[in-house]
Image (cartoon, rainbow, N blue to C red; front, side):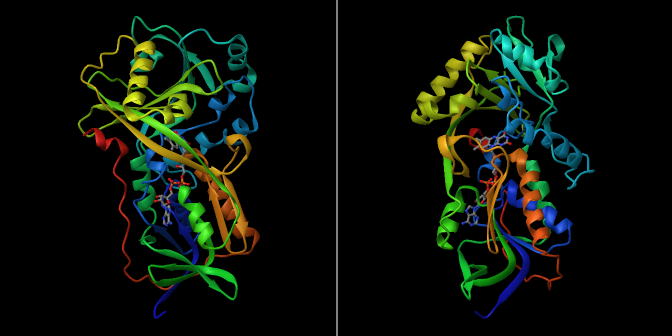
Length: 390
Ligand SMILES: Cc1cc2nc3c(=O)[nH]c(=O)nc-3n(C[C@H](O)[C@H](O)[C@H](O)COP(=O)(O)OP(=O)(O)OC[C@H]3O[C@@H](n4cnc5c(N)ncnc54)[C@H](O)[C@@H]3O)c2cc1C
């Protein structure tokens, strides 16, 4: 190998987990390189709904679980970063909505009403009505209860753009990545033939982690994927709506977020139960028909004659666990010099970085100064997912 590079931390994967970690490490003085084989944000991050959960959705059965407790601090951390006063300076990232809403088209189950009114939820869930309702629900025919959650919704392309700008020259487009094993130890990666040695390698490649681990000869941690079949629509009649619509179960019947296009029109992005198992089994026309039926049922006054529709299939990647239960926190596993993980939610990117930084500090891995990098190809940022609708 004629050329080689050294860095403190070598990160694989330019989604929110890798980009957030990269920006934090650089702020702490570490030298880093982040490798991306596609586009920045082009995996799950750019196809997410951008909700910075505080965990309330996971309390729909009427009690705070471990999940709701662990994630509860995330909106505060993101808000501080967005104001330029947090662990990262995210000023300039577009906030689509300062609140996400819970919307029950019928009455709420009695235990849920008293739970939302309880001390544990005070300040996190407030009932709203009249002009405080989300614009799309301000209609004389609207019936139901709406609760405002202290969770914000972000424009993910502007988030990815900001995180990429905090990365300096550390982002590298890499098509072929192979483990670099020396004396039986993973010491770095071969990146398109270039040896890159690092004190630590962190894999944040989302669904790509499994094959990277396999290539490096590691059987653990195991990964699971959870397929989703999302629906999007664009129509002149759409007004802003950021809400989980409650059904009878512990998961939202449908979760709707609204994404402005450059022309000012909105794209509604529909997830929740609609996009899960039964939705995954439908083909695109059947899934669109199901979404049309849901919206006609929930918002019958909505004129969607000129709407354009599309669906999007994407897998959520997470650590394997029994019964496909969602994990409570960001997940990080360590094997020698290799760290690998999944934030499990966009909102938990700060928690994921905390875990990596705690590992570096525990092992005494300190920032070092490395020579200036040669010119390396930089990955592009992903186009917004709704561009397919023109
Ligand atoms: C439809 C949907 C909606 C969601 N909505 C929300 C939400 O509203 N709020 C929330 O908190 N969470 C949400 N999530 C979850 C959230 O999007 C993910 O947990 C998070 O984005 C994962 O980030 P990541 O960086 O780990 O992975 P990714 O964003 O998937 O990024 C991984 C990156 O690694 C790259 N990569 C893969 N393999 C390789 C390789 N071999 N070499 C180099 N690069 C590689 C990929 O190209 C990709 O860019 C949603 C997820 C989905 C699918």
